[in-house]
Every structure is written in C-alpha cells, then in structure tokens.
Length: 490
Image (cartoon, rainbow, N blue to C red; front, side, top):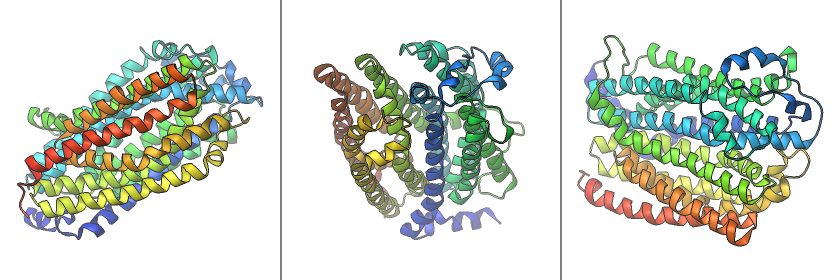
C-alpha cells in the first residue's frame, strides 16, 4: 500500500469518534482488567503463605538466590506469615512503581510523539521515535538491574521490618528488578502499537503475559504439580516470566507485521531530536508516576512509624491492589484516547480533538462512579479474599469507604492529564502530580496521623489531595485551551 493511501485511511482521523474510542478502548480495557486481576491474584496467593515460609533466607545477590532457589519450604501455619508476606510486598511496591514509572513514562513519550508525527504525516520521524524509544527502554532496564543489586536491602530497612518481612521483600524485589527487561521492552512495543491505533494487537501481548502469570503463581508459590515451593520469590518469578512472554509476543507483532511505523535498528544511532521529543512528554510522565513511588514510600513510612502494628501498611497494599480493578479500565480508556487526541492535535482538527476528550471524561466518570458504589457497598467482602485470619477486614473497611470518595474526581483529573500528554504538555501533568502527592497527600496524611493518632483519619488525605489536583488541573486546562487548542482549525 502506498504511503498516501495509508495516510488517507488512518481510522484515528476519519472514523466517528464514539465508535473509534469504543473500538480502541475495548481491547485495552479487557487487557488492563486482566493485568489488574493478576496483580490481585499475586496478593491473594501471597496472603496464603504460611509460617514455614518465614524460614526462607534473604538473597543479597542473584548468585546466592539461584543457589538457594529450590530449597524454600512452605508449611501449613498461621495468618502471621500471611500478614508478613503482604507487608513485605507492600514495602516493595514503591520500588516496583518507580521501575514501572520509568518504563511507562518513556513509552508514553513514544506514544505521544509517534501519534503526533503520524497525524502530521511525517512517517520517517515516527519510525525514528519508535527505534529511539526502544533504545531508551533497554538503557533504563539496565539501570534498574544495577539498582536491584545495590539499594534493595537499604531501602527496605528504612521501615524497620522484621527479619521475616525483610527476607520476603528482598527476594521479591531482586527478582523483579534483575529480570526487568521484559517489562521495559514490552511496554515500549505496546505503545508503538497503540500509537497506530492497533489496540487489538496490544491486547494479545498483555493477555498472554497476564494469563501466564496467573497460571504460574500457584505453581511457583506453593509447589503444585511438581514445581519447587518458592513462596514470595515464586510470585516475583511468575510476574517476570509473564512480562517476558508479553515482550516476545509483542516483538513478533511489531517486527513481523505490516504497519505504518517500521522499526529498524540497521545502522542505528541515537537521534538527539527524537530522544528530546520523547522525554519532553516522557520525562514529566516519569516524574509524575515516580512521584507515586515517593508517595507510596511516604505513606508506608507514616503508617509504619505512627502505627507500630504495621497493619496500616498491609491495608494500603490491599487497597492499591483492589483499586487497580477500578482504575485499570479507566487507564485502558485514557490510553486509547491519548493516541486519538495526539493524532488529531497533530492533524490540527479541534472538533475531533475536543469531541474525543469530552467523551473520554464522560466514560471515565461513569466507570469511577461505579467503582465508588462498589467500594461503599461491599468493602468487607472485597477485603475478605486477602484476609486469612480476619485481622485485616475491620481495618480495611474504613479505608475503602473513605478513600473511594475521590474516584469520580480522579476521573476528571486523569482525563485532563491525558489531554496534556497528548498535546505535548506533559509538564502540566507533572506539576499536578507534584502538588497532589508531595505537597497535599503526604503532608495531610502526616498531620492527620500526628493529630488524631487514628489510622482511619489518615485516609481522608486522599480526598484532600484530589481536591487540590482538580483545582490545579482545571487551571492548566484553561491555559492549554486558550494557548494551543483554540487556534486549531475546525
């Protein structure tokens, strides 16, 4: 097919916006839901780990880990081991979030750049954006491999964990970081496909990885079907194998299919212009999502230091896992929307751009309102699937009911952030996240904890922070519309 024919038939510029958003979002919502499911399944299985698993040794290096990988035992004991395991995974979560922030932030920069260049019909520049983006993902992965062998133990010791919790957390993080290449390359390839509007193909890779993880979790954690009993380390190993499966499938989809964007590394040299454009959107996105890691670390610190039973850390871990069931479908919608918005911004079509954005906001509010109702009506039933001995449910019900009131507000703020990134104004999203999480959420949580000495009061910090986010996002939206969107043609 000739280039002119391809340009004229790109569905992001011609298909009715409602149908376009639906057809692009549906595969991504499905894949995001399955991703959220396997994150939840990880924690459900971890919550069933028993006391004998406490005997597993820590792993200061991958070589020691490989040597001892197959000698862990899991017994038939109590909820104390399960709570230790959940706490360990909760403490490990900020570093996982940081790793994901770099991977997805770089991929978001790729997505925005490639879609805008396709809308502008600059196909060579779109190709350069894809190749340079994958190069950046590889470099980023190597950085985290090094960090996995150096900072894991000092990071976990910040929270004064028990030796059992430290051992669990160390095993989990070393594996996830040392084998992170699958995550980085998969997300880069996934966004290349998204940037062309081929979300059905992205679903294939994500579903394959998620299903692999779900199947391997019980086999590696509990030693079913003749597999070794690896405990928390087994959960991490199942996760990275799933990521590598997704990577391999996406490699085949990108390099063996016929696409508008053609990725080639023959004679490749880093392109400074492409890298700058990727990080113009990607760097703020990395900071924005990396702030989530800082926020999570800070919340764990507040909860662990102010409430010595550490039940608050376990509650936070359960909340974030279940929150993903609500947020992931919305992220599927906004990820699909970003490609549509960026393409039509590049094509300077204001009517389609704003129609797509208004529809995105509406659908996201509906999704998040449904999540609010679910968390208000059934918090105990939700938490009970993680609670092996009844110690978490009572503490979690109040958290779920309080925090979930910010869901509809978050739908509006995240939709505005998607528009900022799609139009190349990732700096706006970064500022919103900084103000929300570092200058509103953490101070509010620390003050509420210190004044009330009641863990239930801490959860109101989420509502306070979201109100700040809405105010700042609205300010930047008005500024973006006046300066960049209003001048586009109808």
